[in-house]
Image (tube, rainbow, N blue to C red; front, side, top):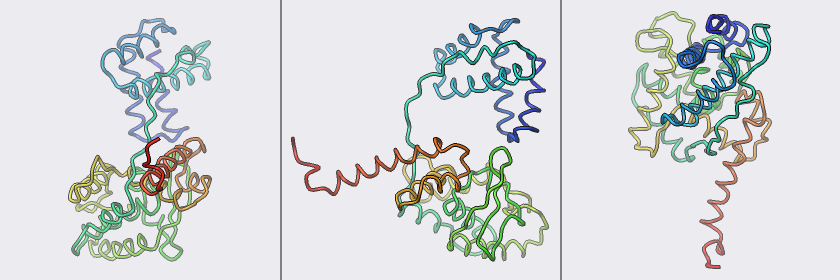
Length: 289
């Protein structure tokens, strides 16, 4: 079955619009599985692989992700007629602990987006990157993939290419638009013609890793507790919208989630927030039983 791996990865790239990062991860997970699997792969091979991942000290999230890769691979083989049944379909995922996404408080995120100081291209770019991540809740891959033509400064809108190359239009807040306008002035002074909206100091596209470095740099300067990533700002965007009374389906559209169930984790987060506020503010909350 290993001979079908390249066909499967090509399918992910062309038909599913998977990112290079996703394709690399699938290849790594599947090649690892093939190292220990028998020639005639069956249910026991897959169960044994998942079990060995957990007993070998891997996190349950890693084992679960690798099982998801196997399910997709065997589903592809079954649909294309290469195998009669999908053996991975019957393997249960490891039970994962429920983890609520981390988010920043309003004061923390305001301090973060205002932290890049000074003048010049890099300072203007960093301010625009941080403002846009919080203003529009973009994935890091979506932000780095933006082109100049995707930005409508007049209307304050942005065309975003999400997972599976699905496009959506998102609004950009006033503060983020001001930061983007200032950045575009500095960008023009570079005289580096490039379709990418965000550039590095060499005048080429700013990568996902570059965006992460910007976020980590300023969060460390502020000594914010815990690891702060671009995804933290995405979670913060969604959480603050929900706390302000935004409809869950509106948040779903803005985030580019294909399923509402993916967005619903923020309702749990909001309940935790409300309980925390209650415990701190309600006069009866601290009384003994």
